Image (cartoon, rainbow, N blue to C red; front, side, top):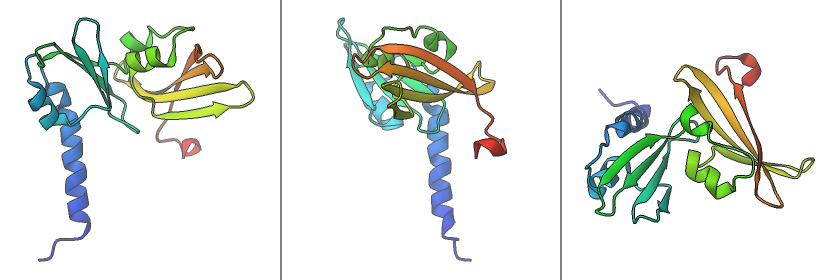
Length: 163
């Protein structure tokens, strides 16, 4: 019996989802080689003053998780954090730079601009308390790059008005 043409795409999609589901399985002590073999290259690497590095793994653009993996100076995993969460979002405040926001909650899903308010607007999708689908917006002053405000909205992915 011939294999339907969609089967390889479906299998690739299932494998990708399985990889995402296993990401939190990366634990302290994991080598940098094993980390890269399991989850690939990071979207960005942040250097820390103590010689450690934070590797950023956004699971977007439609994903609701971003992981920051801290590598110790000996190139082993020290810590794994899911930063699109209340714990980290609550640390956002007016006056932060774009880099500070990105380092705290990761790469935005989308970046748009408002000519009316001269703002750059970053957005992320996340799960509030692992229950509600939410949108987070960070509005930056385009001239200074400083965070002006954040806002959050619950989204209903099943609603006809959102399609």
